[in-house]
Image (tube, rainbow, N blue to C red):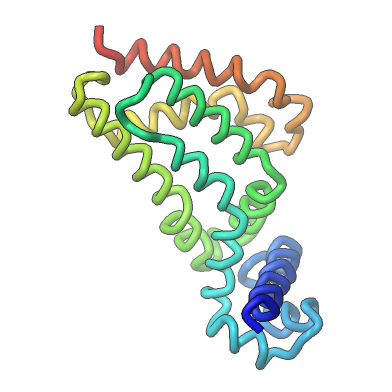
Length: 200
């Protein structure tokens, strides 16, 4: 019974993802999502009490790979290698079909509903906080110079994405940010970051 329930839940999340991407958060309805999943609205509400709760589950599903990238940040190891490992995992997940689908949902309706806030509070803010905590630990250990951990985290994020903005905006991932070039771009970003924040 438990497996069947989990399979049903995953089916509802998959159907909701399709509808959110097609319609945007605001226009998506629980009726259409339940119909797409091949069930009743009562069943959908039995699993998710509101559209917001359902969207949060969709977002968790789509950001699972990105969340795992942040887990790789463990203070105390080889700092340069740690940043490179994180950076490659971050870019790979950023360009995954899952994250691109989520960005489509947010960009499609973020300014007209609560979806932007939900995305920020449960997505970027959570990851940026983890990266900021990592920066703080490395500063305390003397491996990075003293500065604002949050600012350092934002600077590193910016460096990682600096050469990929056009790819993210246009969707021309293979052409403008191919996987084969990402390790080199990440290594350059890490080099610049450590030149600014590394201990001389």
